[in-house]
Amino acid sequence: MLLVLLALFIAACSASTPRPSGNSGVPRQTGVPGTPPGATTSPTVATPAPTGSPGQSRFPLAVVTGFTNLKDAVTVAELAQLARSGRIFTPCDVAIVQPADLAVSGGSCLPANQIASRIAGEPGAIGLLPPGLVEVKTKVLPVDGADLFGSAQARSRPYPIIGTSTVLPPAATSYDAANIRTLMSVGESCPDRGVAQQAITLGRGWGWVFGGGTARYLDIRPNPAPPGHVGNGFNVADIQPTGNAGALWKMIGAADFTVEDFECPVVSNWRVNEGLSFGIDPRVLGYMKRGGTDTVILANNHQTDQGIGGLLESLGHFADAGILQAGAGRDLAQALAPAVYDAHGLRFAVVGWNIVPGVVAAGPNQPGVAWMTDANIRESVRLARAAGDVVVCMPQWGFPEYHVALQPEDRAIQQQLIDAGCDVILGHGPHWAGEIDLFRRTDGGVLFSIYGHGNFLFGQDWAQESQEGVLPELTFSGTRLVNVRLHPYAMYLQAQANLTDPQGDGRYVLRRVLGVSRLAY
Image (cartoon, rainbow, N blue to C red; front, side, top):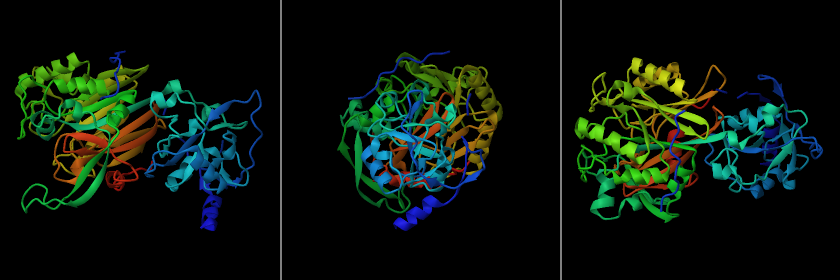
């Protein structure tokens, strides 16, 4: 095995390169309860450069692994063990000065600008990368809780891995935590039906719904539904909370900006519903705001379940709660206008459209939701580009529902969104977590697209696919997308989202998503 590992590290590798590029959001509250591209260079035996001199800059080294690796964190002790056994990619053009356990000789190394491509080709591998060379084809791992590309709190912790270099350009080694922003995206929410039943009918309360922590699976078994009934032929998971109350919403609220797909009207005359005409308790919005939701997209197929009056009332409730909204309005102009959230200087402009039948489309003098037409897409994106720094596009597509991979009609819409100029595509509608695609942009950056996140607060416990979901966390350095992580969760009793271990029970939804994704760019 050792010989195989050494052979892998001695193999040659091709280089790769990594996009540069108001209205203010309400202050959030958190917590509820060298070598040119294309050149080929062989690895060399690492000979650490001298410890940095007084005039030499010091910079952190990100720990990266493959995008599809389910590992989500690492310790200094683990890294030291990998270094001692020669099982870590290190940059030849960097001297590791901290910690001493990583500054070892005799291991294998690569030019720094080749490490990301090498890791992408061997997703289970681990490497150290100067922060300016981090890109989306790899995934940055937190180190003992410190995280160069994580939340503001994690970015503020002392970072344990430091290097110096006399040959790398400043663009490769520069890192400014004040220039990093994270975006968290929450999936399909409509806390009526099974959610409201748990909160209201069974008396658990909305605090319980928003108090999810962690969970595991007791069993995965066939759905016992009889032939011809919903759920027959699918597996379902028996889910058990494992504590850590509030952990999920604490993570959501720690992001610099959080956006959520909210699919149903918020009205004062709501009631617990067992059918398909929804209405949401206005008290829910206070929990969402305290949990960190900054903006919601309302372009979806249930917004007029309570009539036009219900839609207009819903707009007022979100305004009163201090949550920005986009995708619906009193007329077409308002429905197409972006919601612009200022995340400490980086303005996220959010727009969205619906193509699923069953809702009133907004018109010049007609309240409703923004419809998915080429003209509407281009106008919304034009307005968003003028108002913000990062354009976040949120289509309600995926009809007919319940798919993991984009269908041909969805792929055509995806191309429309790319052509219109979206920076990020956060899709909703299929009710299952689905395909991720990465596209190289003409300006050198990377566009991230996800088909669906899965149900969040939506009920539907008839299939494992509808019980599970992912929370995408996107990290930007300035306006350039540099890192993506997927946080898996499962819905307990249809109503309470709980984080699952990515290498444990979370692997089911992650493997389902990654198995149909297109990640080369």
